[in-house]
Image: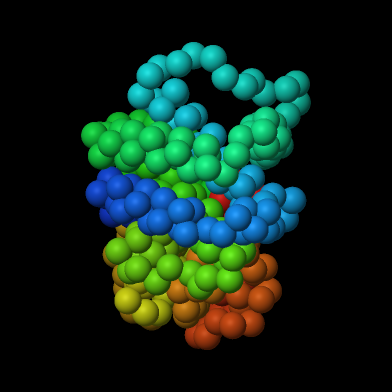
Length: 285
């Protein structure tokens, strides 16, 4: 089997829809609490390679403005692809251009603007139709994607960047299961796309389990044309991967590499299939 993203109409293969809409306001409140608690020296600490905490906060502001301009306001102007530019290169380029432009903005002004615009973003998502077509989610193989997946994807991005800021200043990952459980659930919707090049007989199942109060289990089934999270579970999977929540979300965002995650995992069954599942990535990478 060599499943392709266009083999099945609709999005049932992505599994039960996620309703992230009520979580944007709590995530926004958590972000503001984190940023307002920073010391002056914290803003210059490296949050991700090449970007400081201030840069990452500016990147979030760009995400906020982009979502409102495109989907709330119908604003037609914005950056365009350069000739021959891939999606990954386009996104990385426009993100870097925005961050560099915002380096003249002080941390205090960034916080004030993030507070104002972030509340508008939360209200926008609260009012969306989860079944409406929306932006593609490339790492899940859905283009266009339903709004429920697009919005959940944005929640994971906001949440992940907040954790990167927390880690930069010596704080641990926020363990709040309200948010972390939805983040992990969203990230695992990449599992069918991750396995798309894996040849397996129809009915073969690969399960990824995440431990703890924010965890769960996701089973991808080879259906003959693609892998699906919606197929009924039958018996024991051919491969089962058990991860803790910290390893799972860091793997999906490439905070750790697949080899490191696989070394931390408990694996039952076919190790080749398990290694394939551990190549999951839930960001544009």
